[in-house]
Length: 254
Image 1 (cartoon, one colour):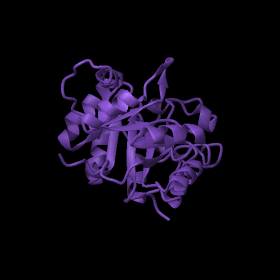
Image 2: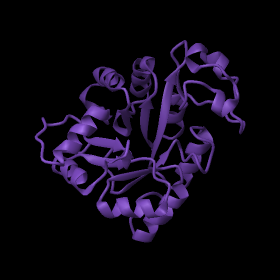
Image 3: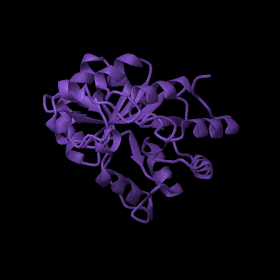
């Protein structure tokens, strides 16, 4: 079976989490530009919808942690949000701005609110970007909603129930054929080690990539790469590039 274009890259894939939030101000155009400048082909980010339905790149529902403003994104129109700056002086980007500015960048969108699925689907469609995006959420209904809008051409990562089923498959329990081609998971969840050789083998048998977040320690990067993960998401993109270069596994730009 042909791989989705989002996944059809040499492995392992290096992914800048929130653009690389320990090396630049997270989820800003400056962070994404820095990741692209380091040669990254993939980034991960988060999206909310403003009161008037504009899709913006931001992790929290509130602006307080990044800007000092206590307002929630859902309570502001885009015209109001556009005037606000982060502590570092950056604007809050729109998703369409991100897609347009970096046409070669592959982007994982984490849907952070229920209202964002429909406008994000519109943004992706207008940008003709279906081949270079992946969607996921901790809330399964959000992923279901955007899949219904964008159809089978969307690359998507399941919520916890899909991950749990694959984990159980690694321990010999039968599961129905999954409809997803990638799982984006932490190494450990609530004290249970998620990413294990069994988990990776169960995924590989089903043609599923295992992408692991958020890994910021060189020794942990090495351990996961030795295990055979498909991708690592990191807040330290310079470090991950150095680790991959040392292994002869850097597949990004120069």
